[in-house]
Length: 228
Image 1 (cartoon, rainbow, N blue to C red):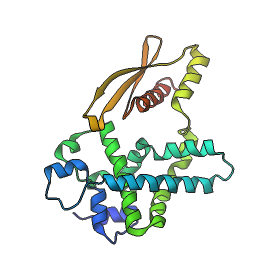
Image 2 (image 1 turned 180 degrees about the horizontal axis):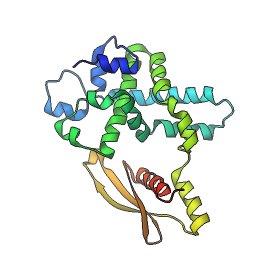
Image 3 (image 1 turned 90 degrees about the vertical axis):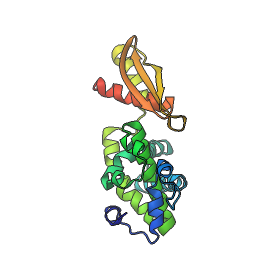
């Protein structure tokens, strides 16, 4: 397992390479490889999530000294959600380094995005454990805070459900209605499917790890479908 390429991509060399390997080990890999000498990455994910939130909060606080707490909160949410983290994982080709079961490697869609996002958080946790807060924050600034300009330009920090309701009521005199359509996947990573409707017309479907998350995804897709 040659991880030199990944270390070059993230601009950080691990003193303890086992931390990096652990960050790349998905739970499913251990089911097929019980002799693997390291645990799965969920503990590092737990740690990395906290480091990510602190580093992002600190960076936004420094970068936007005039913004109120509410605006900073929505900007942070737009930067650290799993969709954004999964997207940014592609910057460092993270997926090709992940250790997963054969079944997980065939999985696509929302479940794969969640795995990639969790691995990003695990990687941040591993950097923190290996080198401390500063290199972990440097990683966050380089690979995540770099998206702040796009977030602002595209309005990704705005709540899609509120925006959809405003547009639907002002343009169509209608209020969007959300309906749960189905669930799929095992209990530990269940995916919810929700539709958003204008009257009897289905405008879009969304997916998420909770009904609330699926509704936000559906609203986002409905805005795109209506070119709002």
